[in-house]
Image (cartoon, rainbow, N blue to C red; front, top):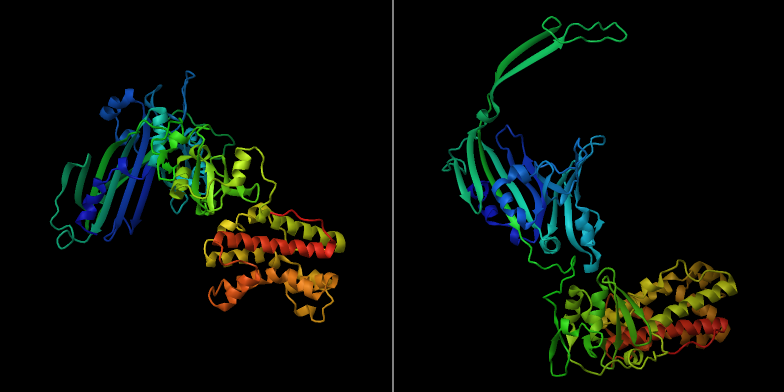
Length: 589
């Protein structure tokens, strides 16, 4: 190590009042070697905390420090003999005098061993957190990690810390300020001071960076050596052969004792030790958006006019504002990449995005492949979601989605159906037909349609590579699930044992409608299958031929190509069912 390390130059400059993470309780000891031997190195950080209202601030600053708030402070409930009870969340200055709030509790477990640290349940519930592993996350904000804990190799708590942004929100709601009291220690045992990194250092005590630093340089023998004494006393009046012996009062005639003393020494080397203590306030900013529901002062602006005019979100947060907003379709895939978001289709061109905020954002797709949304539906969302929408916001183009207007203005929702929905409906109808007609399962395993539809979406197609991946997903939910074993039992093809899933199903269909018609029905499925193979090698004429075989117009936007791919694949599945079982006319999108 070096002088900067032992003097803790960098560490004392850093304050938690402007850090991302704030420790609420910490006892972290990292060491290497034997503490009494040369070569030993250790680093310790301990921290305690409590939150206080303004009326007790002066008392805290004058009277309380590391010994009162630090890691040695016991956080536990206490029942007094007179019936008074101090709950665990109370920080007491004197008996029965609560002046603050503990945010981390101690839970000793003497029977099973060790102790647990528990984050104050009021903070957990107020911020609406849930526990996942060693983290507390907030589902409403994309499951962001708000607080986290860590343990040592024995399973004992080392640290509980919280993200400052969320801590300040909670403190503001309760009008509290958090007081931290922490201690840092670094130690290295060297053979001799001379010739070491610390040769020119001398012991010191100084006020530094709002805290107190002390450097100690001592012989290891002076720290761990010295005299020792032992005294042992015992009783002599107990008859061990009695069934129920009873001892009488202790006196000089029924006790014995002995003592010994000695000297321990011979430890070599020098112990260099740097220590730093500091107390620090973490102040709130008088704003509590999450807990108290204060208005957010950092909301984004949105483009509302063709000339680029913008309005701040708070001005759009009105059901009667009468405006729509335009967004690139990429906003859908970005939102769906966030945990807890789902997409549902209402009509061929409208749907809803369900978010962790608890809202459903109704959208429409317009003629320019842009997403249009009623302004209020975006403005009411959580701030972090609004920022995602704002990043994809564009000037109006292509008018408001006609089907969205039909639902929101004319109150006559379109009777069309999204190609994504029709695909899964067609697969279910085909599956039911095989079960009814042949008493076999068409697919080897079931899938969750709603979950699979999050991946199989026209929005997934943004370029040729993603279009090919979409084809791969289609094949995965249909062709790769086909029950080859039972389909071979139904096939009469001479080489049925060599046929793949699509070819087997095509052969079964050909017996009903003829070989040529069956080939035509399967053409677009075959094209999608070839596109899937092309996913690994997305260039060349084979990919171009596969896209053409799948019935995709390469002159359309990639979003519309994705829509065509899903539509054509689903239509083929429907025609398979119609050819085999004479299913009713399907809805057209």
